[in-house]
Image (cartoon, rainbow, N blue to C red; front, side):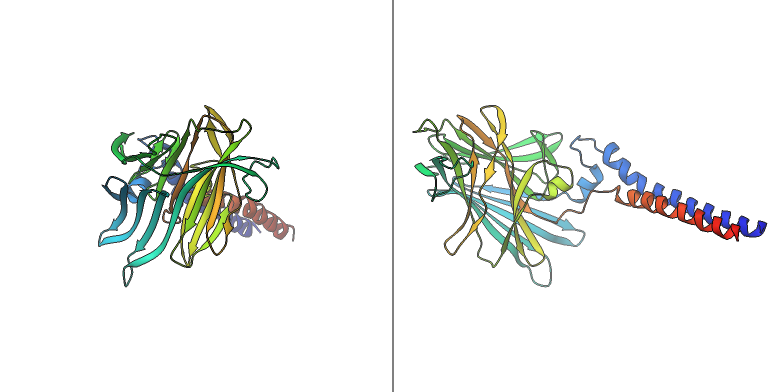
Amino acid sequence: MKTQTKTQKLILGGFLALLVISSFVYLPISADSHDDDEDDDGVDDSYEEENEREVEIEVQEKEVQIKSSLENEDGFENEFEVNVHAEDDGLKFKLEFEEENETLETEIEFEVFLSQIIEYRDLDADGMYNESIDETVQVYQLENFNPIEYTVETVNNETVHSLFVETADEVFSATLYVSGEFADIDGIVITPTQVKIDIGIHNFNYTEDDSVLALKVKLESELEVDYEEDDETDDEIEGRSDDEYEIDVNLGEYAAFFSWIETAIIDGVEQEVKATPLEIDSEETKLYLNYPRGSEIIHDPKLGIADLLPSTAGTTGLVFIAAVALLTIPGLALLFRKKNRK
């Protein structure tokens, strides 16, 4: 009996020792997320270094080409490109993604097109523009853009590329931010696989006292993509953002997205932004971002490629070990106790 009890203790002790050793394997991962972050952007520096991308930008008067590539030891691995066009019928963002395989080809492509600001009276008081129900007061066409301004900034020792474009009457503006690293822009962390867009509507000439505004957003693709609405973004899952909504653009194993924060700053006050459900028909795919009335409206959408970055949830393994320990140790103890009684 003593030999059996001793053996049981050795088994239980060995199991506990294995758990302790395993925890030390995972603990550094958890600690790194807090301790190894010299630029204070909330992202582990070694993780940033592994996912750092090369950014190239070419600017013309009304057009910008952004290239962001990741290279391994053998050279090219993947690249996404965003072309920005400030046209007479709106502001267009075309995103393309290529990955190195047997033949280099475009894996996914789509366009986001900001075309109009709608002033409307919300007759059914649902906070969203409906062409068949609400009264359309006026349609402001996004056109006559000034030349695009390009600057390079250093934010917490990280290079951030900034592009600014506005209409000639200064009513509508958009500021784009892109970086080859994780960067904290006004409290919002952008990843190397994203482009942040700060939309501004300034001193809009309302013609009715009780009207509000909606921004028309069109999505287009030359490929047979699938659109899917998602109320939980990758950035929310990874703890980089809160209260976001996105449209996923899927093609096979590849995915891109257009997302936005579900609040905007209206005359200095944070207020809710409502988006109409995505409408898909033979003519166009569109939605409307609806803003409360105000003189100064600032909103923060993003677009980019999904699933290129590995998860930063380094504590998952540690949580798993703890759960196994909590479930297994009592079971082993109960089993050994029953054997001893026999």
